[in-house]
Length: 289
Image (cartoon, rainbow, N blue to C red; front, side):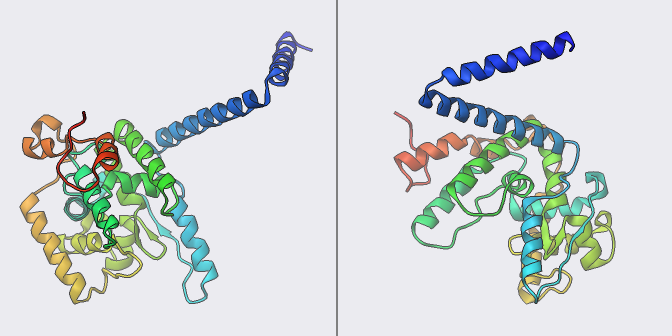
């Protein structure tokens, strides 16, 4: 037996001895912090892995597959084809930004004003407005199931912070456009472009990009390949916004951005949490005492 193996056995025995010496409460606490440390390490690994490689599969893809299998009226479909950002039309980048998250380049993952408005409407029993940014949607789509719960939203906020720090805006947009659902079993802009318009995402026109962007809130209910009056009207609105906003420059530095919008994004997620605890009614920030 080699010296290294003997040393390893000694370490294991010492570890078991220390474990046995712990009280029941001590064992519980040891189990908790080791589990948390393992989950933290796994989350960092996930984010670093997906910083260079697109997720092979996402929780939503798995969920949709089983839904399709269980439902005899639904076709079992899985269409996905990852492409680099430089192979995606700038029209689509512009369209999804103005449609889903107009201040994407300005925030650090969270649009606190939108979160407040969504919270207020929820308290009043109204239909929730979309408070999720593109960064939040990307974190959810890549790493988490689409079940509504406070715990899931908290974990989503954690992953959002990680990808904002580690990936940056270009990678977030690239991953978002490659994993987002554009129809039942259709994931990513390349698969959507081929399915609905019979050409690659690189050649999407302004109109086609606007139609795809409008479908994102309800991808299972809308067909951009056969748009009805409502879809056409909404796509026209998005096209108007695209003209107003102009090209979305994902390489832009913060000092080159509009100072007015930067100031609007001063509030952080901690400010939102403080507002919920101490106010939860007014959209004006309440000063901390």
